[in-house]
Image (cartoon, rainbow, N blue to C red; front, top):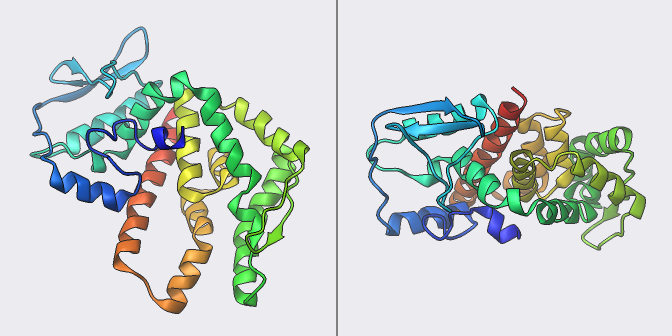
Length: 263
């Protein structure tokens, strides 16, 4: 399920979940030329659609892409309008997310919910370093507020562990997260939560962003405490920096979709 939801249209353009490898794959294949001039949004009985020269945009499964709000449709329309000579799916993260929600999540919400829930059983923010002290403090500063939020808003009290040894979370804790998630099973919202969870390695960070308890930048920084620490001490890697930038773009797209759903 997780591989499927990374990109529903992977077979055509996005043949690897790694953004950098996707870019390489795209370079090998000819991108389709932009075939339309006018981009518009319209409303019908089902919801909001994006029109290219009067024709509705379709998903990779060839269904008309119906968006749940005018704001969401505008995000997709803006990505189509921004395309130049060729259509580059890598530069259309909201559209890819919308396709995933419509073609995949809408028919498999329970499986997607379970996938997010699995992340919470070994959530990033629960696994702490035992040294050096500066890293321990940085993790606590970034992650403790998320655990406080989960405890106060979800009624979920998570256990912490040092290192990478798995710690079993209380059944009541995971049950509380499941209850919270089931209230967010609408396909576009759940798709955004799933994407943020996959990108950050933390269901709690994703859920806190969805609840507006964290902004996207704070959550992204929290998700990369360890990685940024290593960069500070050992230097960066150009390919890793590029990969993180592409992933952050997808994170921002997920947040934009959530904001559009609430508009």
